[in-house]
Image (cartoon, rainbow, N blue to C red; front, top):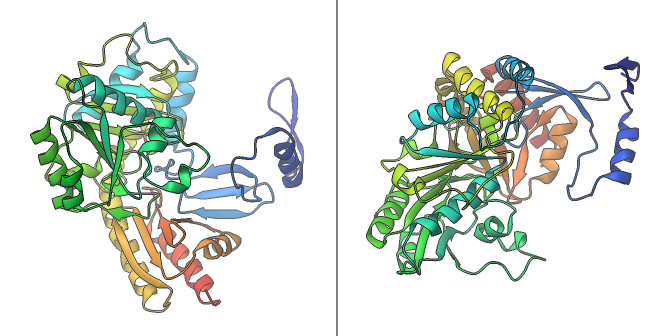
Length: 407
């Protein structure tokens, strides 16, 4: 894999793992704790590194590549769009953006879309819109402990986890934190100054914590009673991962605003906020924008993602494979005392451990399996929606072997 390859008129050499790491050490800011692997190719559920190793990816791209790596329909859409128009500023109309907005609206509650480049940007837009839309004097936001909403100043403040606040104090004023799934605490936090409640239907980074039906319905009721906006952060739960287009569709409730990103672009950077029409009307020209938001390339990818999910019946696969995976993990739990519980919906699954999970994740990677540990003691399985029972069986076998070695 160290042969020289000509991609263009310039000669580009595939570097060794060590050469690439040294390049990063010298020129890339070290704000990530990187694994000592250089990934050179992804296909379906498999990654390939520069040393020729194959990795079964059950946490693809931090839950971004929900269709697996380099899905053919997404790749073809990108190739076609790249030859026509990559980007045009938002003072013009473009077909891909309009088409994607239509597809999303018809699969949710009929709202209108604003496009951006990430989940954090989508949540930032939602918070700004909530203040714009609600009455004067409403400036507070209620969010849940254990949440994760992004890294901008507003969204890191909304993220009710102190570890993300270190070094950035003072944070923005107006945010109130309550325990997740605690209706009494939610009721106590409400006042005439609350503009919105923002929560995740399933907390991802917080440990795959599933909201109860009663909790989301209480948020809806309290927002209605107090003239506040209900915002659901669907950055991880959106675009089919739970077996429905959006996580809220598992509950007998409709929000005012939802945000999405991750799986929406099939690996291409994109974020979106959808708001009810009467709320969206408050976002008038000059109030918010995104230079690259809704660019042709990202929106073409988003259209391809939605079409692929429907053509290949991947919502159904997420339901069936999710149940299969949870059953397999429950069986594994009977063998290994460190596994305390399994929870989640569809292909968003967490395994609660009795102790830290980092070493388990590292050992799984050494044996060719990519999973994740969050909140120190929760293993995350978020397989691609294209995965099969064969992929799951391989993953469970590797995890079983690692846990059998004394973890």
